Image (cartoon, rainbow, N blue to C red):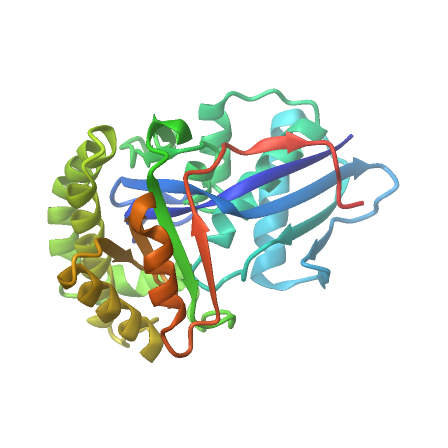
Length: 331
């Protein structure tokens, strides 16, 4: 009754920000993402009658209470209910990138936890069922179930049964598309995404405009991916990210995830474009800048990003694989 899963993080090209149902994690808008090959979470779960309570360890650190522990136990409870099990679990998880820092660690974390837990308890769910289940741990986790490019359909049903991700294209579809991921700080963000979303939805005067324009962004990004139209994809993703952050900046109190280095990088990407080096930035709910580019320009763009003062790390990513079971466990 033990399994290990590996899940890749995903970065949204059309963002999800705000929920119509907090408990079931049902979004106010659909979103599209690219699963990344270099950023992943490995999670081992064992259910046994030897365990008198659930235990959780993340990146070598025991987590015994708080929101992080509560969310993991909630997800285990959903799987236990499906399998009619009352066994407690030992959970160990490791990320190969900073968590809670705007690099979608909760997406890969809950995708890995969901698959490992269902396999350990003998459930054999298809991708749609896994996506619905993973969504209830972390919304963006429903997209990490898939490799390549995925769209999380917001759905309309109150029970969330039609709110799950579907693959738009596999990772092999566009091997020339790259994403340079930059890390400007390793620190966890002070305002997590969940309260940040709630605050924005509650009082940002720009939130209505965000919802009114997101459908057009979805159409353009979907077409950009399928037609391999880099300019359409990149330009739309960049403006979409700026619109999302504008809603946060105008919330009360303000939510500003950007660091000075974030803005420096954004301007550097714009400067590169003026010089004929085509790249487009996107930023999730955090300070880290990701730069979409084509393989032919990737090394030059990565070099320029590295030279920006204060950039701690850069990673060159392409489209990654779906969440999968692996043999080598963490214990």
